[in-house]
Image (cartoon, rainbow, N blue to C red; front, top):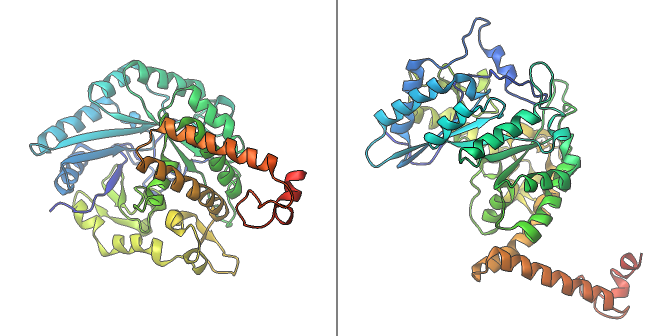
Length: 423
């Protein structure tokens, strides 16, 4: 029976196997879950069980397959030709299967790009910014840089008519350079971008050196947002900001990290093993195997429901009283490992940055939504923002000591912002 609430599956056709050795990768270590003799490739019977089950149990009529890794291109085009055959066999009349491939881009030769284009795959491509920042952590098995190969992959995709979505991690290297990273993507004429913070917790409770610092993440996102709304609204879609716009408009976020609860994004390994989440592929979050269990039973199981509800139910009191809770909802559970100011467990490591970021965005987004409701175009909205900022600067320049402070506090200028603006 189909699941009525939409869900996503990250399928791992090659398991954790990858041709890169990115320092911050959390998935390479999953090899340890399997025997040393394991052949990391999804067998035909597992693939058929997955494709048929996912189609049968999806709400439809659009069925979105997400192929993840590891590096899924290592499975080869023949594997994905079989995927297409199975989808054609099991898709009901009037329904459609869509395929998304998340790749590091280093293996995108003309053959791969032709195959992806001919079969209408969408592509997610990992790039961490300009060369010196990307290559800080994204290296191959030999320890060599990968940026030039990834950029070649990007050019080849575009030559075949594919405009990929870009996933940029925020880490200890690139988070210090928000303007440089953002302008790199603008120069590359990227149309869709998402920033994903890297947090790796070590066994001793500290974080790995490549992890982004909380406040640096907040500053990075605030800096990029300020430029985006003033110059690039409608030109480039940035998932982080567009999801916040949904929340500011009273709608729920689409992405799990910002949602009240989670548990609707499963991970399916190459052997059919199914886990609660891509970040929780471990024995404690093993749900079953889709060769013997239905996806519907797994995602609606009491164990998985409890996993999803725990995101909300385990929030510390500090979070429940937070003014930006509706945007944050505690962030990803994997990052909730520090204490609140009053000593309660379960605060997100990125809390400081999230508070800065969401507090900064909220009033700006409410203003933008007001403009959109008036039917204004992105260009008109940016012009209105510029006009209001010019007017605000003029008020500061002409304000005298006994005037009402231009900041809007209601106090006299001399008792409010006079000293700070005179410096």
